[in-house]
Length: 260
Length: 313
Image (tube, chains in turn purple, blue):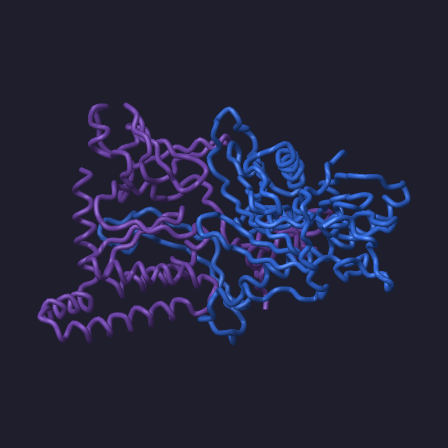
């Protein structure tokens, strides 16, 4: 087995050339810097159990506005550093009086980190397709270190979640997850995400979550057959089965024109 | 309680039944505070300490920010009810001093340069004091820092050594501290580099050398307990899937919402998986390292302040 829990200062290897992230080299030996899981399949990396998000260039994140100035929005990114979005980086022209109308304090948006300088001044852009102010849906926070787990092996987890819950999902690198769908689906998805984040070290997690979502929907169906809303539920169920892609697309279409 | 008549019984055991080179039993729980980024509850004999780590986070006031590195703030504080006679809560001369030396004890191990301009806040709260609280607080703070995911070159372990009745003893108990001849709290890294040393009382040069050897052994034992505590927290997940190098791409395509997130994840497969995944995390914290089978020290009651002696460098 090549994975185990390591703690800071633990000796990992003599293979200095392959020292990767979460490690340091001292006197020809590789030690762990972090409390996490060792992965030495190719390079010697330590994946931390926890930790704050550190902004890095080109990351897609979800931020929330904390300050509005006449020409800038300042975003809180769930990290030690705030991000600066200049009006010129917004997709359309905005006069300074309109700033608060577009995004006010407390509003969230999907944004891209344009640049981070050595003093950790973070510049943000929204001039890109798909980057938008979040107007509906929910934002859930998970530990940034668990983002890879939520996405899964080449997106396996995330596409499973989308399929099973018929929700639209966006995962920001800073551990904020935007989900959108109908309320029941979002509740279920929220529980599934909680499950992923609290069992992030378990194996066969995708399978586990899949079963969880399937069982949950069985239970719901059982309950709903006794109620008047049977028909409605059926229609929704059909939607899930037949046109998940279509629905997603519609949502996407709905989102986009608002920016134009 | 006044000064005991003798500090050792006929068999050479101490007041609480320990040998001279034996530390008190230590119990560590990791991640006990939900709102902290990292936390630790530590019991060491009758000491009870809670440590919480917040950050790295934005530092206010801004004038304290350092453009090239993060700063560490350490607050050692004794709860008003932690000692026999209620102490006035809040910072005092002693707490301020201990906070300063404890902060410096972490300087060589914490990689602050990764978080320029930020702050890492460490709070160590003594809930019950019974001699050696600064060392207990440091031991707890190390675990809390690791739990918060702060990069460190290693853990810091701290232990005191002292002299009672002309004899060197490891990890002073309350009476040994109050009525002993010397108290020497030491913190060190895993390599044995001393990051904190204070002394109260007098030791000869030879005694000092011997004391340092003794405390080195004590710190090694504590380091082992700390390691076990951290490993225990997740021990049910001995077989994990791990992903890395996740790259989340921007939505490029016009219609395919699936491409909102395009992740490139490399996952390494685990070898075997027999341990149940559904094991509650809480079960783990109950395991305490019990290789140190020192008897629980007697409840030492004393109307004197539990203060571990004034520290004169």
